[in-house]
Length: 311
Image 1 (cartoon, helix red, strand yellow):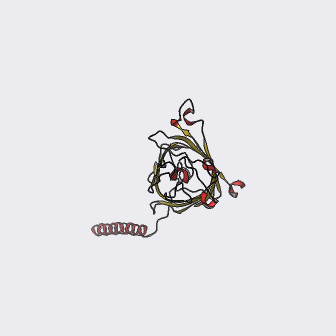
Image 2 (tube, rainbow, N blue to C red; image 1 turned 135 degrees about the horizontal axis):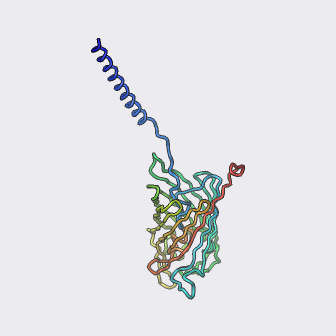
Image 3 (cartoon, rainbow, N blue to C red; image 1 turned 180 degrees about the vertical axis):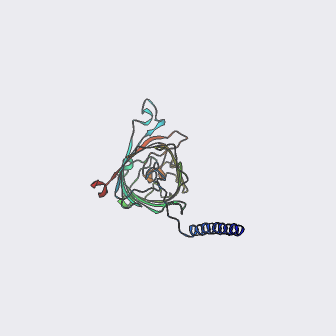
């Protein structure tokens, strides 16, 4: 009898173990078949701008961003006469508002060519545990309000005969990915149409590829860089002098400091302009000649949500 009891106990244990493994296999099958909960990637970049250009980021709904962008003169302008460019200044003031968590609209005014810019950006796709990158689309219109016949940085005198000739349109795809807590990268295919160019032999359309990224040094500090490579030849010859227009690709390096309510962006760039027309299409500075401009952006975010006001 004792032998039979032992055999029965052993058989019972084997059945229990088998059922336990069977339940584990069943749970694994269910976990594989059930859809995963989507977890979206947050804070790929610190702000909606990287240095000069846009990032994939938008604003939260009912949030307002106030931008102050400042560029000094070139560092090769001398110490005595210009204090390495600190005696000069270009400024842009801007506001952007989150209509939804994925859609913002913005407006700005720059002292460079007394330009007004109007833009919108929409986050179409978001990086998550089931999708590899974020895709945003961006479009802007820039209006130059300088008097007819003003002298550009290229030393060309522009003659406008209508307000439509003063307009530049820019459209971009912003494709970005947060590879880790420290590293984020993006590419920015860009198309620009300038209604009137300095030379009838120059192309009104410009194709460019922007590239940028950040490296997070600490919780509050990141290093950033961006570069715009123009595929369309902008070195057409001026009819009056026979010399080429001095337009070059834009390269910028910076440091971001996040204080919570503010983001401070400090940087060096060969592009003094702060609107796409200026830092992509009409950039005359080069790093080789020390045409480098020190500058900064300050972004302050305000919440206009009624829920926050009640609190």
